[in-house]
Length: 60
Image (tube, rainbow, N blue to C red; front, side, top):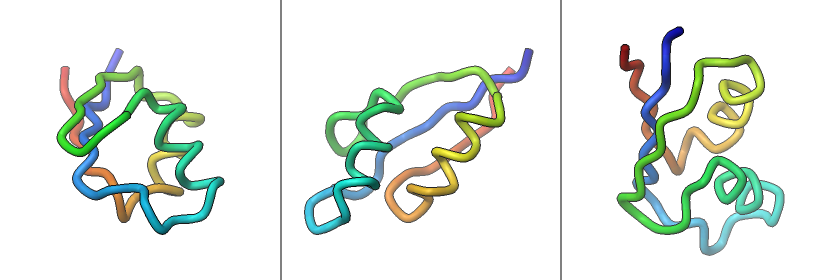
């Protein structure tokens, strides 16, 4: 199953609480944190909501 490598590249300070909670629920705590998640619609939706704070790459 394809996976997504998600990296936080910007701080969540100054963003709405909903966006901060979304980034946190992805498993990211600070800048340059990296998580690998399964490529599912829920994760894609969360990534789209926080696209200005994270970088997403597809990995095998």
